[in-house]
Length: 291
Ligand code: SF4
Image 1 (spheres, rainbow, N blue to C red):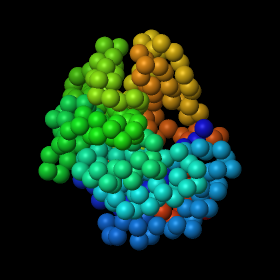
Image 2: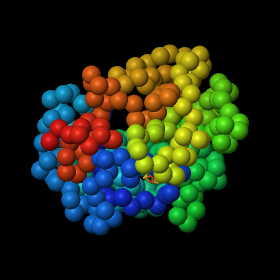
Image 3: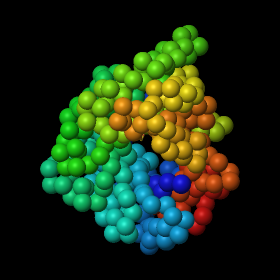
């Protein structure tokens, strides 16, 4: 089943992740840091929803070229529109701006959105901040999870896999104890779903610090066999290769391997992406445009 992503806001972000590719991929290359919704074509969003609905895509992920939760009104407007069209709505965020949303704003979000996916590189805020490098310091992930849970919003952690040291100097391959400890901490925090994902490297002729970091520190080992060994049950195989398991009551998705998060299949799109102006089926190839 393909996913449907809708880009909210502009390129502004309150983090400076060492491997941020969102400004490099072409689906993110069409907006500056001006008004968050100035180029957003609401009519075409309707066409895009019609297009994915006949292809039986049941849910939509609100994401961004930067951090979508910096743009509360734009995000809530998009979420309301998607929900009105009977799509299940998930928001992808780095968590920091969302952790400052007021009670009333989260209460409104909850009317449209069932899941929030928080991207992390570590569950230790200090370690996480070493990679994500938030402006003005980190935030309390555990507090945010509790806050969202109190509104009945299900939290999914998207745990990006990386090596703390340069991989040519020391390869820290992860074992079952590594995964089990992260799953246990996440469960104790109130997280219901966790996705372990390799950092993707876009095809680009221009080297940049983000690609260099992803090449030197991104952990693109395939850990599927480890999750399979610690799981109680294999639940779901995604069409692009990700697999979902039950591990002690936690939904654990593993999307690791050499291709990373930009995995694509020629025969079947992994995702449809509405970038505010066009519907696409790839983040990285400019020609992958539907309308
Ligand atoms: S949170 Fe996302 S958009 Fe912001 S710097 Fe990190 S990867 Fe880039």
